[in-house]
Length: 496
Image (spheres, helix red, strand yellow):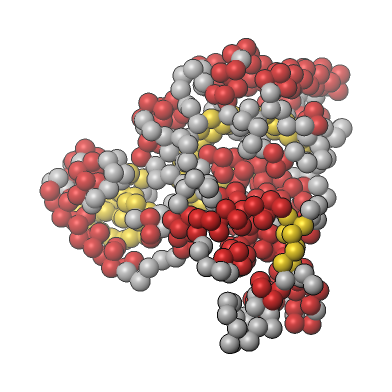
């Protein structure tokens, strides 16, 4: 009798991985166990929605965990007790006391793991390279301290070469960077340091402009941030989003985007923004950052206080949110016509709210909410460049919303992977003050997003610069990898 069931979609990914990554007789079961491992690395439990399967493919527990197999049988051995113990610890429940509960959790983890493989691995890419990165990313090697010591010696030598004499007073290891506290005996050496950052990068084997300077409150001290090699990076766990969401928040629309260079949570108030541009090259982590923004709102708000208006010209990135209970218009707009109609309706909603405020004798949504329940609306455009390329006329309602929607509680989040003057025109730029820049190809693209250079030197994979209205310089933040499981959990919390 079958103990574990998966969907046809799950079975298809098993066959794809089997053909490219596994060559043994028990290859399919190897993929199932890999999926279990992938799911157990996620700190939040798999959602109950994974129990629903329309067309199921059965697998016997004997083949999945080796249940009941003897040592002289070929193939996998019996490690069923080990798996049951792992799941018992993970779920804080004695699963040796209930076979039904054990199989239920095992099936959820396997299905979630297969879904994670399906969404994060491109079948056209090398599976072994993907596997190495996914399973071992963030594990620090034994020679981390030796690497820092070597880097310190190289840094001091390189500083001497550019005529900078300094003492290293402190080194703080961040998520991906090492922050040095350099005491400059001669204040004139600061100019030498700024001009010589490119040479320092070259001397340390880093890309040009990889080293950046951050401010220090200590007199005579400057802080160069020096990237570590990728194998020494730490990852920002998506569980940090869940921990942050459980804290009390005073902001009207709190948004969590990741952790700062030194590992502190970074959040902002979207209501105060009041609009955001999010841009970065393909593979920089733009879409994952967008998911973090949306999920943090879902985790801290409820359907009575917040609506989402979602526009996705690609038709693929925002599908996960199609089941939200109170979508503006009731659907995710994908075609140009749907997007145009939704934007026109949003403009009309903005004008209707302004008329209502006059009748109520109030100035904005904050005052109006004290007299009548009125949800804020977050408008998300997943790919602004694609939208405007299909119809330039759609810029008009976007500009009107950017200019006038703040007081009515309507906020824009515009994302694009092509940050150029044609996509982000002067009218939009002047009315969208908060900018999030992930890695871009050219400094001119960084200037379009941030009004300054810097984004071209980011490390990719969620490394970003965030420009706020009340901060003189952009803040560097490392994002978490928000996956389908975190999205599903956020939607579930929001719908309650």
